[in-house]
Image 1 (cartoon, rainbow, N blue to C red):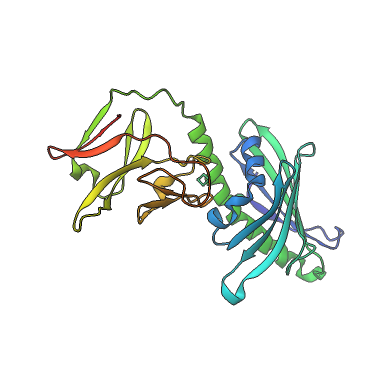
Image 2: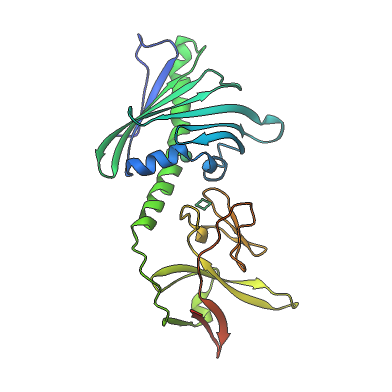
Length: 276
Ligand code: FES
Ligand SMILES: [Fe+2]
């Protein structure tokens, strides 16, 4: 199935402005998880959403106030997503805001274990017949971007889930030439797990300290190695959780914390990582 925009047929419901179709390399579990995941909108889809304030959420879906655009141009809308698993479908409705009344119906067809076809139908009220295709194409274009971003997230998470996490081999010690770690931050694998190694400004002026933290976010396995360190913290690109890499604590209000890491120190001209 190609990624394609399909114009509404001339005798379709007056507010059906078109459909977007696409094949996705993901499982139904990942897809439902993504549909129910309101938290990722302003982070993973930062170019489309500015903020989100969730009013309620559960296995049924979610309702939230979202903003898009900046400053005075910001547009605020109340959105609701309702998932109907029996129908393999979810409906996103604009309850308030400039697109109030618009509904987006997404149907999923399972092609194989990790292959889905989706058909997204856009229903937008008060669009004249001759403007329908233009509006439909604009929706399809926006959805193309959102799904490009979502596919990266869903396949990235699936890859992480597929990696078997054996018990940590406590005897493993990594001794690295600091030049091999340049440029920082550097990604290293130890005991079958990936870690980021970097340097932080230390308390003493002109001094730095080595830090090591997991490349994977403890929330839903997002890629922490894709975000820069900022004053000793790292922000996950998927839902915006922020972690203090020295303590492992989440400093943005969530209860999860970074996973276990080896100790790091510089010894005899080498950067040494070992389990304590
Ligand atoms: S995966 Fe959700 S904040 Fe990192
Ligand atoms: Fe998304």
